[in-house]
Image 1 (cartoon, rainbow, N blue to C red):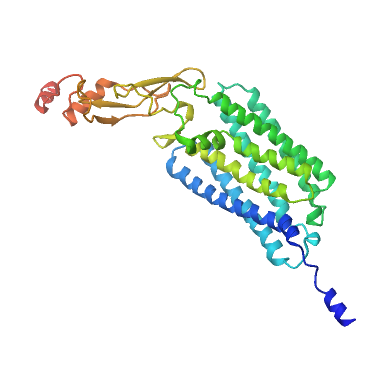
Image 2 (tube, rainbow, N blue to C red):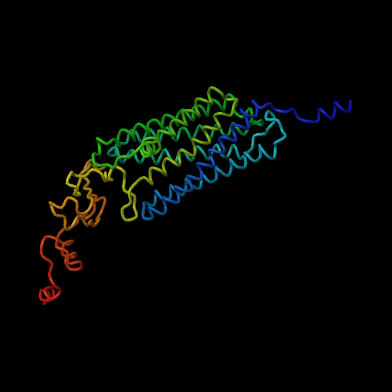
Length: 371
């Protein structure tokens, strides 16, 4: 009797297959999550160092997203520590749903809401301020946020972690992620359509497979659309397994890294970010090797002049000679005062004695003119 009683005191040992489908899935998702958080931290640092004069609304948005993502990562760390360390000896079917896991669910959907609304404003700009698609994206995102809060409230009533996805939770969360997938599809297709190269011929184009993946996969929103769709499918088909948690955790990190990658991909102009559609393809030059001026359409449909540089002392026959370049501005928008080449020539003649349109004058000639 005593031997049987002592044996019954030990909890049943879980099989390797059970551990793989439960704790193994959570651990893999956590590893990918903290790795992507490191990328989030790095991209946030890059943004604030490269674009110190960017618009305040964009800087505040990046700071808010970083703060929310940091809180989400902290909550996930506590959840994993609780299940794998504190309650390590408790069988998985007897684990209690932690409050940190439920709080992470609410913060993750808020993070997705902010990212989707920012993409909606971006689409409103590149589409020529057409309101239909951005309005639909905002409506879908707000609806997803409301249904997710309802599902989080229902999760608090579920005591066991293995039963956290009840039928009511499955319904509300399925509607939530369905609306989110609809918003993501609109975002990805609109970004790919409005930022195509034929619409902006002078726009910078990605070079190589890496930049192509970053631009069309990450910046345009295709990656987080795929992961959000995978989260929805696994939740509906396998609600009692934890595969949907893996895609959900990783997908929230891809949301914030997509918007940071889109912002950091821009050129800088006096500490501000140049919109991608207003940037210049550095390789779109003539066969003579001289830099020129290209004209592309702005978001409002008007022309935006984009100039590369001014070259001095370039002889027509000196093909192998290295010209001296003086970079001026990558972008000249309609609101700025255009450059006066004659004024540049006068200053260059006075300070550098470089010929620019007319012979440079000596200092005593300038004093006579002043008299």
